[in-house]
Length: 468
Image (cartoon, rainbow, N blue to C red):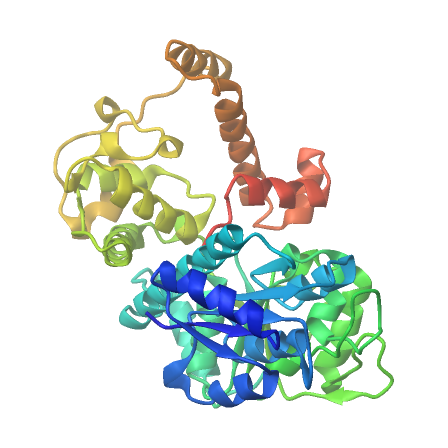
């Protein structure tokens, strides 16, 4: 395993952490200043598993180091330590992308536990990257997906701004990565940001950076995503939820390539190709629509087998197979979460299905399968999509009665969380349906449901509806 790097000018802190981590069989490497760390990072074959850094050191700030490290190695977990346990330090650390904030003096066992969690996060990142490197960028035989592939090919040598439209979970970031990989900017950075996941009051700083002292907690100058993506590609996801005034500023940047950091007075020039997911304004750009999964049903068998292989590789287990009957039922499911939801279902099946062959009864609760309601005659894989519409489907009774039956089933067990379980499923169903009806636009979905934008974003995060 790669070592844990400890950066602190205090020899006693370094000594204590080194000994504690050694007892946990975690290798370490220590530094006394930022300059030596940056020099060591030049050797890409010897990068750390986790970086643990003090904030205030002679000759350099830990927050400045955090900024440089995250720009170059965005997946590397960084833990920031400081004896100055104030709000400004915590805000600055998390704004800079820190994994966690560790105030001094700290409990040694808790510090080791935190580092252990960071190591696990780092290893998950490595597995994910290896899996992506071993598999095709995108899959699809449906005519709608072939149109997308052709469009990517035509745009590959162009620097034009591209607006990708499509429902949540349909694979917009995969398209953005493919456009970057096959463009003249392929050797430059690819920077992705989900604008809906960042609080509005921090989004401007996240995009354009800030000068030191621009606001409370801005202890150092920080480059924003536009500067980090210089010479490469910037993908802005969920941009339709961005505040109107910030969209207006973004349009100006797209038109001339100049912007100001928050609190700055000098214009910054950046050379970035922007790929985004719709704006309130209409631009003279190429628009590329990604089809929903329900519009490419013939791709479900191929995608399912691919995701089962991918999940097995990530978990280090034997890949599971899926029966034609189970594939038929998947073909009848609406997939409001699109390809991402199918990927999550395959990961769930890899863990939860009891046998090596997945049957219809093994499918997760949201698919709501009753094996007796599916025509069980085997169907060749190539004919699966064509046969989907011939499946015999039971017409359910009123949803209230179904809810009552489900509640009675759960209440008959020893469970003590029936309220939470059914409420979560009810809310998930509502949000999925609203997002499907509004083509993934959260603001419009929230309006239809009669809740606030912040509420639907929080619920999506709490219910795990946007994972991976």
